[in-house]
Length: 122
Image (cartoon, rainbow, N blue to C red; front, side, top):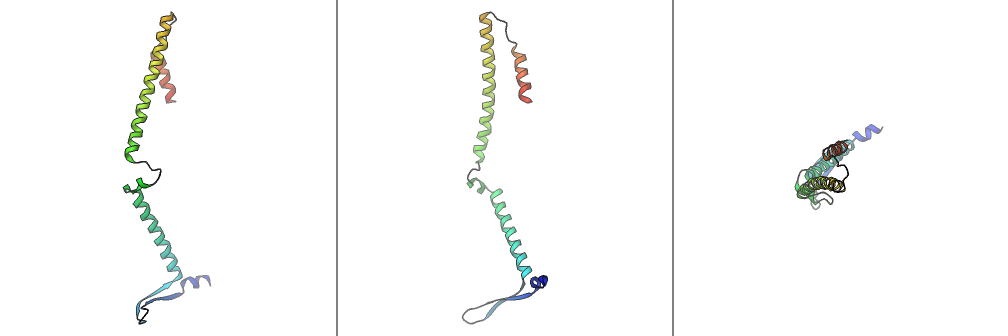
């Protein structure tokens, strides 16, 4: 009984209101209408996704970074990393210089830099 309801044919006609002239006539089933609605929904969602994902329209979405800002963020991260390395080298140099001036033993800077590099890669 349930399958017969979905396969029962219905006629959908489009008529002119004033003259009652039949303009179009369609033969439809409930199953066909459901499948048409689902297919239309999937196609519309897919087209909207493609429009947003593959065009510059995506930059209008709040929180999505502009390519220029993304490039600047990467460049700034690289600069920060090199500045941190320079500060570390300067601290080691100043510590070594203060040890030399006080008469203590010096720090082997190369071994410290190698140890720091091996620790940061782990």
